[in-house]
Image 1 (cartoon, rainbow, N blue to C red):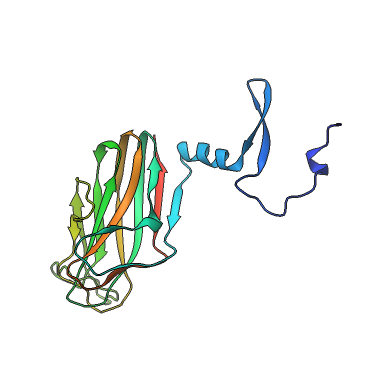
Image 2: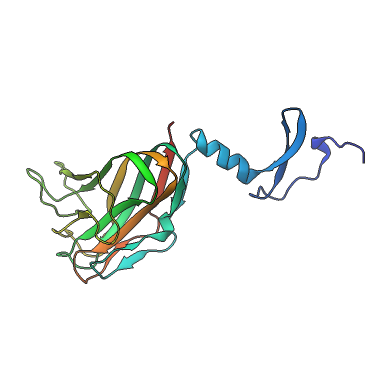
Length: 208
């Protein structure tokens, strides 16, 4: 079969993960898929992303995994990660519990959560969805331990308003020595509903 110029080939209707492209590997012609290209680029800094398509609601003090935001498998390396969460509570006096877990081995791990509070001169612990013009406090929680069914980032002061979208950011660094899965776990302070809303996301970047 005669060679055909790439410019003469029929255009694909859309790019797909299974699409194949030709490469030269050490002088030998081979093929790879776009999935393989993506996997390679992720090892050199391409962001790995997940978006939550379905709200994760829970009415229990024992957490379950937010599977829409994981698990995300990470090979050995150094990573920056960030969960951008939209959270709600059905009851103003009930807080949300969140925990980050990694099933492999991480020689270094940092976990920092941040949320806007109702406090203006001092911390209040109350999640606030709408601030005032003079500014309010951004509160935080720092952890070095992973957690699952008993999240170690548990808010007990509640929300300023019920069923209001409040941002909750969890970010940190992982130095992975043995491959594993990055996970997010979610509970409520009491047996009353709290939610991690659809539209929340996870971004992970390998830095080394």
